[in-house]
Image 1 (cartoon, rainbow, N blue to C red):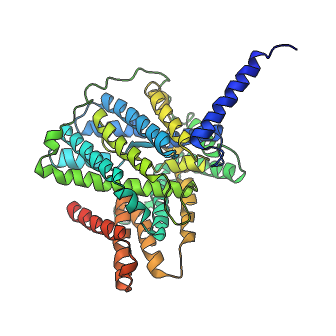
Image 2 (image 1 turned 180 degrees about the vertical axis):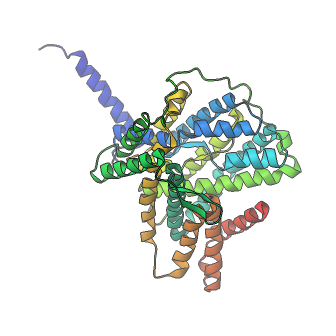
Length: 449
């Protein structure tokens, strides 16, 4: 008998590697495969790749070096996503958060006259506070104690939030001085291509085509080339230096009495935004238990808080769990291998920045709209015969897109839930966690006034 050929050895090695991945990430247990997880990671990355362009631009408005901010953005996203994948085994990616970066640059630095170094210190301290709360088990207790109805409202609300972002990216929703929003122009080629991309992706999904979202994004982007809407800037470039922002945070300045409010505000927004994202994505991925609790939540919270601290060290605003992860979940992502794939792609983006930034917003926007429609399904699980149950959930869901803030929607949800239960004579049925979060939301709104 001839000795085994090398291909047999390679197949054996590949099988062993597959088995190791299966054991670590529990692929079979969650009904997924390495190929599906990698594809889901690619989907998530494509829907959030805009951050590697947008965030450095916002950081530059705060006086920071844009090249260094680009590197910090990619590294913070890569490290944070890897932490989430390896520690929590969740298909959730992290990156500097939109909204928090705007608060950092335009409210804290430009509006309050605080240096960006001190602002980075505030981000680091808020992440540290976040970590302490997470390690103490307090935040896990808070999240798991949130009523299921509010969790369903949060999941749907984030879907509606994504819907508004997606429709804006498609050009279907634009601002209006009187009605606030109105229909965009169908004479815009980008809008027409986006609509085609949505229909293509929806059709592929209805036919059960694997990778429907990725195919839709890539085809839509390619169709933009003849119109000059998709412009490839090249493929490879060396990353800029990180030195101008690395370890530049001013902790002493951030500890000043006047800036403790900023630290606390960053912490509250980070808490509520990450809570909403984790609830929405775990629900969509089927990881949430029937009683509404989230398994392995403590490690996910550690990844969130650790990502924020690392981001501040590198030189960027607060790192958060990204709701765009829902696109990867819809593509089949169920484990941390999806997040780890995103981490690798962000590292590659350091050298492939021209290619990574060539995917235009009109090509990724249809994916967000599609995912938003799917996330709205959570509302069907509400107890529609009980007003005290569904009203706070609907307030939560609608407030997110209408205020353009996930944390605001969640805060209003907590307040309305506690108030309605109190007025209905059911105050004792409200958990202590909800009272705490409702009170914290009142404080947040007062500080933001």
